[in-house]
Image 1 (cartoon, one colour):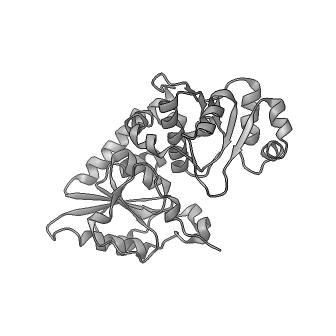
Image 2: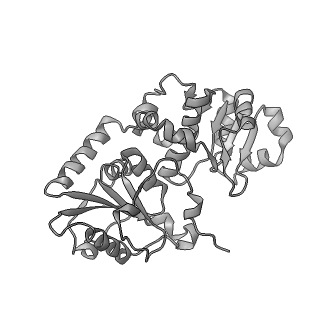
Image 3: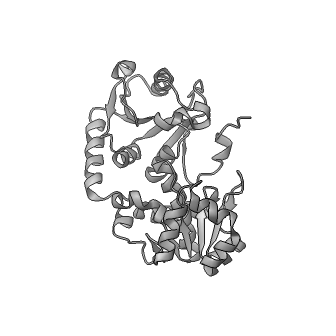
Length: 305
């Protein structure tokens, strides 16, 4: 059995990593438990109803030992994580194996060694770099069914989109990421509002003057309306799920590098433009790309020495 244990900061991180493992299980049919996703379970039809379309997937690993192990290792650097990491003999005694990332190197979930272990051992996956890019794309419709928001959130999203599509021709989602981005990569992607306004102005110029372009603004912090007074703008509900799926209902998405906007692009098949730097120009609609399999995410992240 494979047990996902790492408790990430970031909704998009959880969605994408869990989806890679789910796609791999569709293809290879081994037992998977996703307790690391527990805080988001109520938001989605598949997880809320524990409906994984017959796959051997469950929310919790089951059994007192596994449940206790998950609680002690889910936070990297905690005492339980440190003990298991440093004591392979303790792992053997408990009948588990703790798998960690190998630096920045990705691990293919289709690797025969991993698949053999997934079927024959109890693996605690405290990882971010494990991927199944091929089957993520192939089983995209399954992932969209599992992570379809429950009705109460869908209804809000539908209303947000109805309101913001009224009287406009093109709806562009603008992801203004703040909060934790102050510290991520030294704040390299914590852009000020003028950066977004410049991108919006360039985006608007890509359409004929008669095209009515509205920008639907999303942020994890309050948005200063005066900074965007030159544009036709709208808002969502400020709920993380409803904002994510309203973004997935736009025609285009612009924002800094983020798994949150990647998931919105994937789910709604919406062309996405990631600003890798604050002065990056938007010169063509051909620069937008629908996110399918998280390919080359590392090349989008700068290296700081």
